[in-house]
Amino acid sequence: MTVADPAPFRAFVVEPGEAEEPLSPLQEEILALKEERNAVLLAHNYQVPEIQRIADYLGDSLGLAYEAARTEADTILFCGVHFMAETAKIVNPGRTVLLPDLEAGCSLSDSCPPEKLAAYKEAHPEVYVVAYINCSAGVKALSDVICTSGNAARIVQQVPEDREILFVPDQNLGQWVSRQTGREMRLWPGSCYVHVLFTVESIARVKAQYEGAPVVAHPECTEAVRTAADHVCSTEKMVAFAREYPGEDIIVATETSMLHRLQRDVPEKRFIAAPAERVACGDYRTGTSDRGACNYCRYMKRNTLEKVRDALRSGQPEISMAEELRRQAEIPLQRMLAWSR
Ligand code: 13P
Ligand code: SF4
Image (cartoon, rainbow, N blue to C red; front, side, top):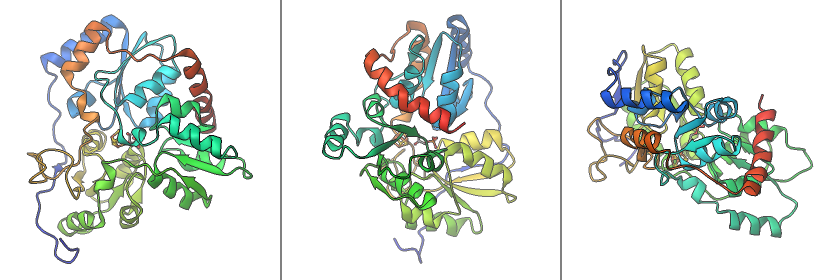
């Protein structure tokens, strides 16, 4: 496939004014259980639309961290991936934190095991570790400050200038922040398997079909894709971009469920999913789902309405961790919350 000769493909498009489905009996049951348990449902923008629909708060990692820190509910039902639910537990040791499926992991988080980071720090004790929130509690506990895609540049700018930064675990986000701040950093060689599936060629293919539409891309994409994009930002900032952009069509290079969040908040626009080079969802052979070319995170998709209901009924699976680890991990996390206020 070449840039000059883009093959036709069926784009996954969320049309203006696509109506939200009425609540199903299962969604109604979840809302009632949530009430009974005094639970709050926090959901990431990559959750399936039927979970997004019943969330008390829907947002990016930064917004979710703040919501988790301020909630007064007895139970936090976290619809996202493991490191996000762990983050909620770190700032809420006294509350029950449920994750509908404990197997909802993250390739990026997996790319930086705590033992490897500990060994690196032993060999290079001078480094100041800035950790992207997409990492385990073990890695957070070894870090100096945490950041998200929504505040990474702001956090890095506040690191004392005489300190050499090691940025973990996402080399793509790290490189983007480095370009923005002018701060050189050592980059851990991790990446998100979803975002690296976008390529310059796959972006060219969709641009050829939707001429003139801007591309908004997540910073976890590769530098080549970020350069081909018109705007690079966190998922939450994509909502603000969509609101402000005067045209109707916007191409979105991030996990495909983000299109539903965008449509909910900015219903008058048309959102087109940037296709992945090899698709991460639907049928791997044809590279499409039944709605067109998409790019879903298999970990985010482990959460289903049935698992959400079961978690509220049984109070399981619950996130737990050793108190010493939690206390260590909370220090850089609270530093982030303070630095990005
Ligand atoms: P944000 O929603 O914070 O931009 O992060 C994207 C992501 O990959 C979460 O796993
Ligand atoms: Fe991890 Fe990427 Fe999935 Fe986000 S989209 S949870 S970074 S694998």
